[in-house]
Amino acid sequence: MANLRSCALSASLFLLTALPSAQSPSKEPPREWTDPDTGHRVVRLSDEPGSQSLYFHQNAYTPDGSKLIVTTPTGLATIDLKTRAIDKVVDGRVNLIMTGRRTGRAYYVKAGAVHAIDLGTKVSTEVATLPARASIATVNADETLLAGTITEGSVPNVAESRGRDSYPGKGDMMERRLAARLPMQLFVVDVRTGQTRTILRSTDWLNHLQFSPTDPALLLFCHEGPWHKVDRTWTIRADGTGLTQIHRRTMNMEIEGHEFFSGDGRHIWYDLQTPRSEVFWLAGYELATGRRTWYHLERAEWSVHFNVSPDGTLFAGDGGGPSSVAAPGNGQWIYLFRPQLVRDRTDNALPNSKDLIQPGVLKAEKLVNLARHDYSLEPNVTFTPDMRSIVFRSNMFGPTHVFAVEVNKR
Image (tube, rainbow, N blue to C red; front, side, top):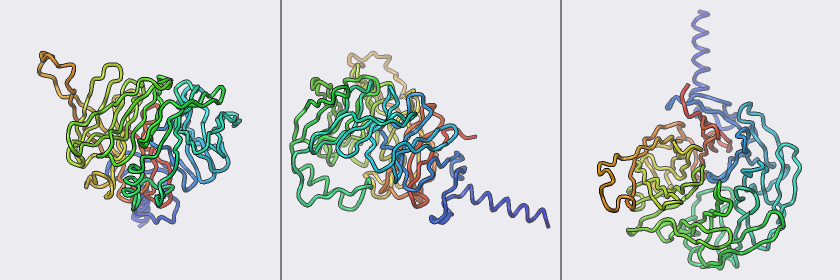
C-alpha cells in the first residue's frame, strides 16, 4: 500500500511539472518543467508578474553574455543567466531602449531624456535631452550615437493600443496612419555632446530603427504600414548618405518585413511571403556583396518574428496565433530552425550565377507548446549569447513572464 501511495504521489508530481498548462492561472507558474510535447526543458526566469523581455531585435544582453535585462511593472531588472538571480536596477516605469554592446550600460528614456545606467554600480547618467515629439529606438555599436524619429502632427481618431502587439482595429489604425503621410524626421544624437542631427526627412512612416551590431555608422529602418502597401526595408548611413532599399518586390501582394541584423552585422534577415500568406521564406541579404539567400519554410511553421543565433548557424521563431497574418494552423509553438542550402548542381556554370538567389530550406523543431498563449502579446524570441537557450515572453499562465527554453534536450 505504501508503494502504491508513493507511485500515486510521483505521478501527481509529474503531471504538475510536465503539464503546466493544466494549472490554474491564479497560481504561481512553475519555475521549470520539461515540455511533454517537445522534450525540451523550459525555465521561468522572472519573478514579478508582468515582466517582459525586449522586442526581438533589441539587444538585451550584457557584452560578457552573463546577464539579461528585462522590464518589470516597477522598473528594470537584470537576470543572471547562470544563477537566475534577479537584481532590480531602475525603480519606476521607464522606456527601455537596449543594452549597449560596448559598455553594457542600459539605455532608457525617462521624462523626455535618455539615460544610461551602469548595471554593476547602478549609477545612472543623463545622456541627452530629446527634442519635442521625439522617440529614441537604438544605440550604435560603439555607443557614440543614438537614433530616433520625430513625427510632425498626428492622425485624428487613431489611438494605438499600449502594451499589446495586436488588437482589434490595429489594421484600420495602420491604414489610416499610412494614408496620413505625416512629415517625419530620422535623426541621430551624439552621446558625447547631446547634439542632434536630422539625417532623413520623409512623409513615409519610419519605424523599427536598428543600428548594426558591428558597424557604428549603419542604420536599418523600415517604411511602416500594411506590408502589401509599403517598400519596407532600408538602410542609411549615420551621416545621411547611402540610402538603400534592401528588397524590391517582383509580384503583387508580395510582402516582407520584421527585418533584423545577423550577429556579425554581415547580413540582414527578414520574413518574406510570395505572395502574402501563401509561400514563405526567411530571406537574407549580404551587405558586402548584395547576394541573397532565401530559406523556404512551411506555412504551418511560419512565425511572427524570427531570429538568428550569434554564430549564424541556427534560427528561431515565435510561432503565430489565429489572428496573425499567416495564421499557421499548426497550433502555437516556439520553433528552432536548422538551415540547409539547396545543392548547386550548376557548379556556377551559369554566367549570372552570382546574381541568382541561393535557395535553401529550414528544418523545424518544436521547442515549446504555446497552446494557451494569447498572441496579443508576441513572444519575441532571442538566443542567449552562449546559444544554449532561447528567451521569450509569454502569458500562457495568465500574467506575462520571461521564460527560456533549452535548445538541446537533456
